[in-house]
Amino acid sequence: MSQSIPVNPAVLLWARETAGLSVDEVVRRLGRKTIDAKTITSWEEGSDSPNFPQLESLAYLIYKRPLAVFFFPTVPEEETPKTDFRTLPEAVIEGLPSGVVKFYRKAKLLQLYLEELYEGSKPVEESLLDRFELNEKSLLSPIARQVRDVLGISVDEQTKWLSGKTAFDNWRDALERNGVFVFKDAFRNDDYSGFCLFSDKYPVIFVNNSMPASRQVFTLFHELGHLLYRAGGVDFRTRQVTRLFEGYFRDTEVNCNQFANEFLVPGEALDSLIKGASEEYLEKLATHFSVSREVILRNYLDRGLVDNSYYEKMAAKWASQAKESRSEGSGGNSYYTLGSYLGRNYIEMVYAQYYRNRISRDTLAEYLGVKERNLSNFEYWVVEGGR
Image 1 (cartoon, one colour):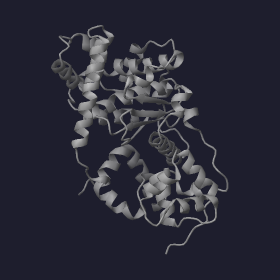
Image 2 (cartoon, one colour):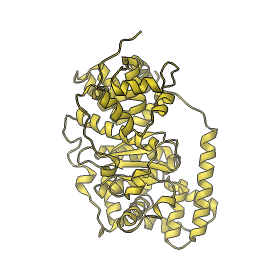
Image 3 (cartoon, helix red, strand yellow):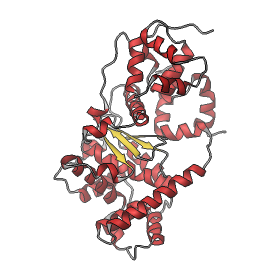
């Protein structure tokens, strides 16, 4: 039997509570008949402690914390969703589901990894956030055009992609070349499309991979809008939450949506193509710009070409179709999936540090979120492309 190890019980309790999980939820997620609620409680009270495999599962799979934190002499001080998501009303932050909070913690952990990998230095000499900033007086269209110029992708190039996945990959690469890091995971929650965490050096956009690829593209630039406001934010899938916002909170959300719309579908490019509002033609325009149909419909709504009831009806219909399509799909290679979640640029950076002997193999595994014994499989499928 594996030997128990001397972890700090206060940190175990802190990790569970900040992940928004009950003891019973932890037991269920561990999925082991030998671990019950009484065992978890004994670990948190200090009368017993987990063995190393158990701690690995808690750290990497459930709490999304670095292993070393559980040996700290005191509970770490850290920011919370309340401090990061300043553009959201407090009641909305407090209502975030535990699953979203878990991914928030994962994003914070990835920011910490980025700081360690870059040894505290800036990844690029001048990032997008160094060049641009939004405030209540900003003219969104000119800034959207200027950001596009810096990213170096014209509308003509965009219209050749004809695929939401291709668009996401290209936009992601362009953002990361300019100092904005993009990660993904499957939230399995249709109410949240993603969120972002602001940082002068390591801003992160975290996207819900359960959403269609074209919706993920919109999330990238909605969240970039929040980052340009110098704050974290959340992209809600529907307007049921945001329509209750008032004042500053509402203005910020509206402006981030408008920024994303102006960026992805510049007004002058769309105006010359508008011919009708049929579902078939909206889909044709969405394919042309490699965006979701809802983005095109939103532009129609803003121009007064459709009314709000039509917008709501079609948006609900398309969301239902996307959910049905997703439920019919099947799982793929888990290593490919993880590679997609982390992104090529992050993985290359991690391995570069490893090959320079700046990090150990167990740290390499921690940065990638895989167990050390599975690194060979990860390298075969993701780094070597299955060759």
